[in-house]
Length: 396
Image 1: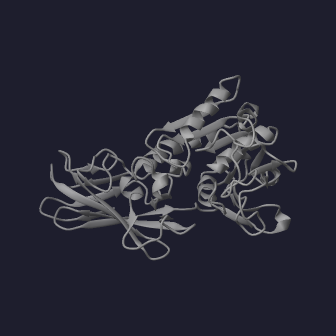
Image 2: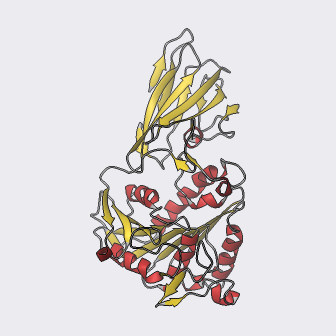
Image 3: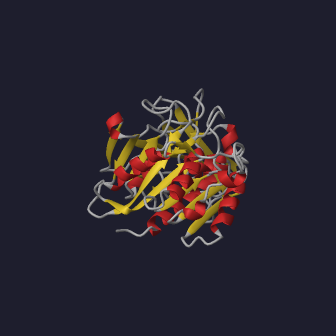
């Protein structure tokens, strides 16, 4: 809380949580302004490379002299609709900064300063947003003996067994799912992020990746303290979403739920060169679209034994993820007995595959969707659905 004394009374910033997870919203209210008074509210922070990020917008106080960010629409600024977290996710780096990039260290705390310019003098306060919650244990798996390349995030409380999540990214390669894994572990879900190519000891490209590699990682995950081995969930983005659906269909006794984010409904060829199969099972290439019939390349999602979560962007410029989502939904309509959640965001782009909300970032234009804000708005809506999906998985 911060306030300033002036002839029209103290201007005060009230924040409901001074420290919170980055994926959890904070409620910011400014009071003490005159009715109808205009004020500019800014949020600033500094990233690990010492770049300053900032966002600001101008608001008009209501009849009580109050600006509630969750209800007050800005008259000008970095975003255009009433959004309690708009000033946080709309921060952008000032000056030169690499693209794409995100605010904050990989793990640790993001310190955001909120400043109100209005009234006699500016007033400020800070909010600490955690990229990883307290008590989380991180175990690195890097050697050939481990059998996979990844980071495991164990929740602080492992006294009760909970559903666990295996997380992996898409054609960007590398270990890209760590932040999502850290947030889910901070919310109580054991989470293992793995790479499957473009890391030491792994294939250099997305070519002939054995699905058994993921199955081995999932088996290891099921053996960890606090993990319910009867409720293991796979979550992948883009080409990883394709892999997640394949894993659920191929290993139905091991995979008990699938979250496929902006996935394809069909198996695709290797990447970046389309020179063969991306995946193998039992040493044999999985048939892919273009090299076999559509029927052979269509992922048999009806074989999945567990709930399915899919999201897509109507302005996906990488591939038509919402067309694929409709295909998946149609397949599941032919006798699938488990719960399914299919979320379509008409204005979002391929970047809606990264679901953690409220994190300031710069995205490549081909991932953004209709506007630079489209994915951020969609994430804010999608994240609670994902958490509901995970919490609905029965616990052991």
